[in-house]
Amino acid sequence: MSVEAVQPSFDVPFALGMMNLAEDTELTRPENLANWIEARLDEGLHWFDHADIYGDRRCETLFGEALKHRPQLAGRVHVVTKTGIITPQRDSSMPGIKHYNCTAAYVNEAIDAALQRLGIEHIDHFLIHRPDPLMNAEETAQALDSAIRAGKIGSAGISNFLPETWRRLQAAMQHRLGAHQLQLSLSHSVPLFDGLFDALVGDGQIPMAWSPLGGGQCLSGSLGATLANMAGERSVSPAGLALAWLRALPGQPLPVIGSLKTSRIQQLTQDANHVIDRSSWFALLEAARGHEVA
Image (cartoon, rainbow, N blue to C red; front, side, top):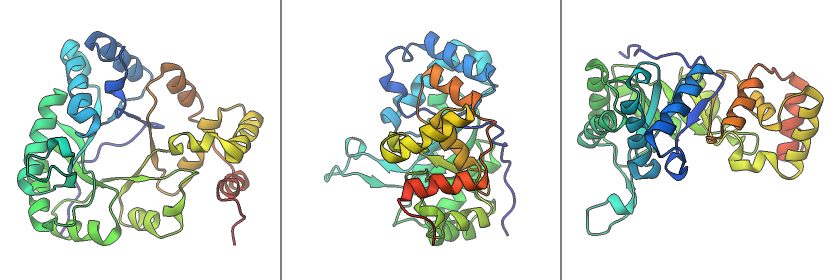
């Protein structure tokens, strides 16, 4: 029977995605990144989203170097990280092909390596990044359960999984799966209508929305114009309104924003208390889909 893992609360309006960290020349310096992290913590933003594939492991490494530069920050940060995607450059086999790997040996190694790169003793949420068609559910489950019991991770989770795949993994686990990252935004609302979102909320998973602004698509075209008009009437930013649309959903999905710009982060923090009314929620949905609901 599954038991509850220790799942730290996502008591923030959004998580800070570290995918683009290695591309920011200013933040690649440990002192500058430490200053940036401390500023975010002082603003109440303490969840940082990583993956070993981000920057080919460099993003986790840079984050760890910043914490080493200012050790007092390590106890204040909460970390989500992911594993399971092997890039062609990392594939040592003859094909040299992108593939997935969530074998017990790989998962165990990935957890230890992430802890070392990040310079922390505990990962709050550790996720399998993509479903592996070759997954041995019992083997993977044992690796994740063991890491939870050892205190290496607080909770195991998944990303981009479909119900039957995560249920096969869950059935083999002693602990409950926690966070579930999925692509979700005004410009990608399909999971709200194909049963995926209802399934993960119904199974008690914590939804995290990656690409919550659709890579900028939400802020352009006719949808962007509608957001801008409605946001102006409410004294919030268009991006802030788009995130409020997400947070109105059952389970209050946690957006994972990709911007590292202080001004953008502060604006979204300022907009975080905005609550969207039902009619406006559907008006934005209609603008995004190009038609009214049935």
